Length: 321
Ligand SMILES: [Zn+2]
Image: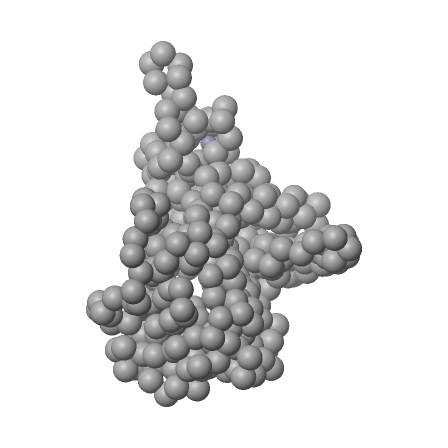
């Protein structure tokens, strides 16, 4: 399942390639035909993410809400301006994994015939986006969108997908986001330390923190040396604050890089001559999908256990109960 950094990258992508454009909206598969009809011909004002939720705001007062879930993905294509506009390298596909164009110029004469089950297709003069396999795709009002976001926990990446501003606006935005950042940290600490539930489970609860999935859960707990079974109530506010700061750091890297890399250089594998091996993909994680392998820090085997029906990766030595 895409974690929050992918959804923030999607919001940036939509902002870059579609904001201000009048869009033809359709549902080639048919399952979203009536929703698409309500958006068809409207102009996209803004794209934003909260956790794993993507919201596209249109000028007719309606919002398209999408949650990719386990199998959903967006694909994109278009002309040079469409592809060149993106600050994030214009991935052709964002979902479980990202793929990129090779940058070669292509002639663009409209979107291709839909392939597979395309729930919704957005088309501007310069390019297109297709959505397949989402868990949620619905047209809602701004008030309903606020209600959805309001129920979620704080998002470590909030502000990451805002359009860039300049001059005085940027200074003001910086000050505002500092305030908002401190508020989000405090909110996370409050929600995490209020419950007896295991911290490993709380990090997966979108009402505690929005956007963290299985990889960021496992990796940030390891980086902080926290046992996944520690009850939230037993995490000190200081430690909870440090955990939040680490989540903000590594997820911010994820937005920048388009992939999750949590290892520090000193913990990555080297070849027999001591040269660092490539970071991606085999050197990217501390514990995620490394069960049975030697822990990068202590050398003991990384463990795999079920927690609340999800796979949990951790090091019993580095993360003692
Ligand atoms: Zn270890």
